Length: 601
Image 1 (spheres, rainbow, N blue to C red):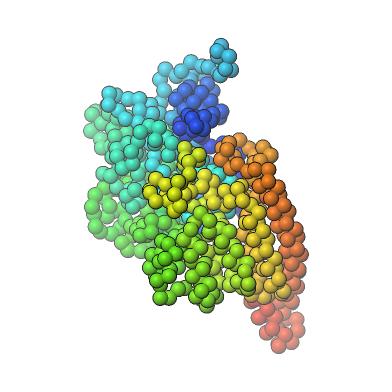
Image 2 (image 1 turned 90 degrees about the vertical axis):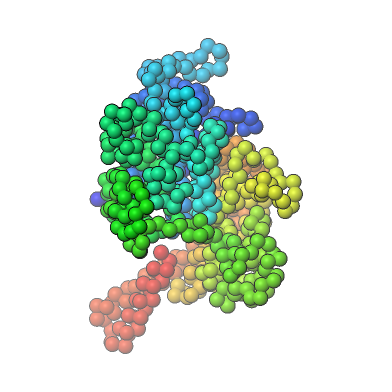
């Protein structure tokens, strides 16, 4: 058994779903002004037949996607969680959910070789499946008189993904693709949030999994199993859970769809206590077993306010249960799993919306005496303007001796959040729109103060010189602090190196995008336009960063050699070589080496 199986499986599936596979386009992307085509998932349009997808192929794809989701979940739960890794989890599972939704909505064809149309367009044609999946039909709005289409609401994903740390550009691009797909499906089908047209709304009700609040799911299940409900007298929650096996056996695609969306929304839960302990989980432990029970039985303590879905997996009798009484998920007031360190209100005792709010504060945070009050006021004022804060904050830390302030973990979090958090998403249909007033004075205009693929990629695509020059200067100032591997400056230098490496990878991504060397799953055409001058600035800035990386590499090699030497001396001391005094000194050195290694990890 591979020792690093969890890392390899997560890396493989992340690569597949964020780089190799193009994610499906939403229905609105096919219309002006975008007028895009989806050659993989909907070559004849989202409402047209897929000339190569049969009913059997559709079911097989749903089963495969469900199994891949189980592999990813079991591997991800075996690794230590972090803000950046949580971003990977929700984006990869969101990508699997988007593909599952697109596959299930696709109009299938009968088996056979498709023919080319005679109208000169070259489009492939095939005979439609006479008995398509009823789940697919109902989702698309094809049903009895008065039936309305249904969709999954991505509002929690859009909110949570604003404050994740997108450590790679591919995560930012996939995040936009996932959110855009689900939002466009809702708008194209006329589905309203909070009504009986949205399904799997567990995240909208505190992740308690109430059965009586799933009005959309009830409507879908009741229609799918109308005859069985009359004959057997069963209840719809038992059918949805599989306790009554009729629905999950008759429509296995429903079970796959339900489980994939559940895993996606489970990892969107804002109460971190519900997640299982880090351990090695086999893929079999990610098989979901659903039951319908009383609330008190599911959570092991009163009150008992009704029926809930109890979901068993990963060694937990109920995934939404935690060990702190009353054992129920309790989302924080912020509505975020990771509150943004790039917001001024995160660091003050009172809310901060504009710079004026800071002027009337009697005291300001000093970040463990790392900043003077005047410097703190300047930094926090920059955080009140999210769209332009990135170059302002970088300029702040490269002025004077402020690089030394990055010894403070809180300031490191501020800088990292400013650079890596994607921020609010600008929906594709609004890419050509811009606010008419500064500041934006209406809710409609405030929605336009956003970016299509995150603030970092937008900044690098439009004005890379400023950002890259400040970052290079910050890296040079950090390397001035370099000396011994046992110095307290090492953690600060490694932090700046990590941030710079992630920015450099985004710059390289944009250059590959401009050269047409990205896979089909890259940014949409026109989303990240770069002028020839901006591309030249991007190349020059990236070259400067890589030159500084070479200097940093020499320091890393020297530190590694120093640590290896200290480790060898510590091992010799532990073996009894040397007098008692030297053994005591070597033991102290060994402890320091272990502490430094854990810090670097």
